Length: 98
Image (tube, rainbow, N blue to C red):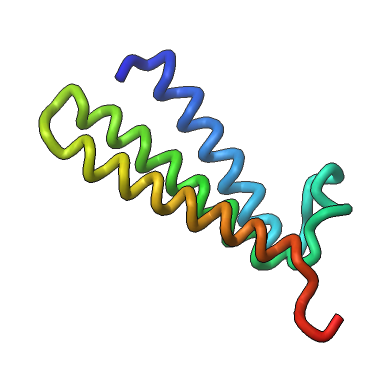
């Protein structure tokens, strides 16, 4: 993987992780997200999962140049990304009993 792809993806993962930590610690969301997200704490975990998936994808791309573990690493990154998306869906739904 060349640096012109790795550095922006790393910065994007860092920004998503910072936003996730802010949602976990204080319940703060970006203004665009406030009307859709009902459970900010769960949304923070989802953002951290997506940031981890981005890091795993970058590691998989680096391993593509090194050898044969690329498929396993990128598939695990896709699984983490899918888990993050499912957490986002759950964060948008109101809790039972509301």
